Image 1 (cartoon, rainbow over the protein chains, first blue to last red):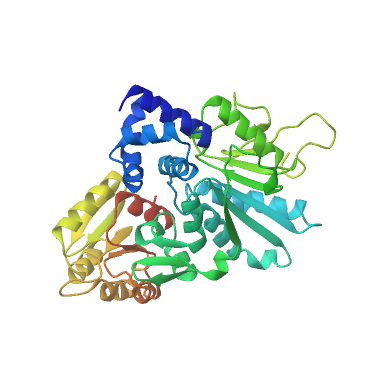
Image 2 (image 1 turned 90 degrees about the vertical axis):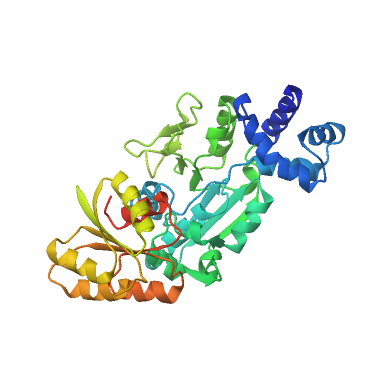
Length: 282
Length: 121
């Protein structure tokens, strides 16, 4: 690939999705963008680059962005965050929100929806404690294709075996040929929509729990900071943020601080104003 | 070190599964049908059993039913690993006392998460 083509694509991707593509990832660009070139009846990446330069066609730019996003996910990924959710986060929130009886959970960059549905299944098991509560699970992703997949709740045999205990499969899925579809009851607990994390997040409303795991790793420091700052704006003072195992806020933003003794969990940092301190977790 | 008995009539599958399990720090033994597995368990009850369904002489499900009636046969965590991938088979296995269920084909990730889920890792 020509250097100027690589630069053009990487600038485009940085702008649109925050993805940072280093030169050693040129192979990734080639392998993922070739199908896009073919779809648009182009011979190769050189043609693709030329067309992108000539006219900024939104549908094409969107295809390129989506092709380059990593959609790696599994049910109950890493397990521990979900155990913590059940043992610590949920009980604290049930206490802190006992007046409003409403909890909103956001699965940011939800990919194919396993995280959102894992939470839905987990909450389903806690149903007796939650009667009379309104609990919303919202999954968002930059990819329209992923959002559509989430809504159908259909997974391959391979996907339902990664992280999902067999009893949960039997209980919550219906088999359809070699695919498995999550039950309507679980599906209605989560909603999904297309959303770019680099944009203004306020239209999404406020969230009591934010899962933003293994997303920041694709961004540079400045973008990480911006996204975290934006996320802090949609979280009340006593909300909690989940980051992935390899991610941290340290050295990136002072909007969040680690929740002591709970790896991967963060709360909005004390702004100094009286009463802004985390009530539920502080 | 925990022990795992790999029960499958395919030598290739046993070999692949054994390699994965040994990487997960299990000491492995093998049996090529349910009857051989019964004999192995009578001699030395393992901590875990990775169990195929369709085998000559004695099937996996028949072995499991007999195992659970044996002295000490409640102990091992049994993880089915079979090409039978329909809900009816899964339910039959669970009611016979299986702890987990893997639908072939499998990879090391699937074995690892399933073994972790039943508390073997």
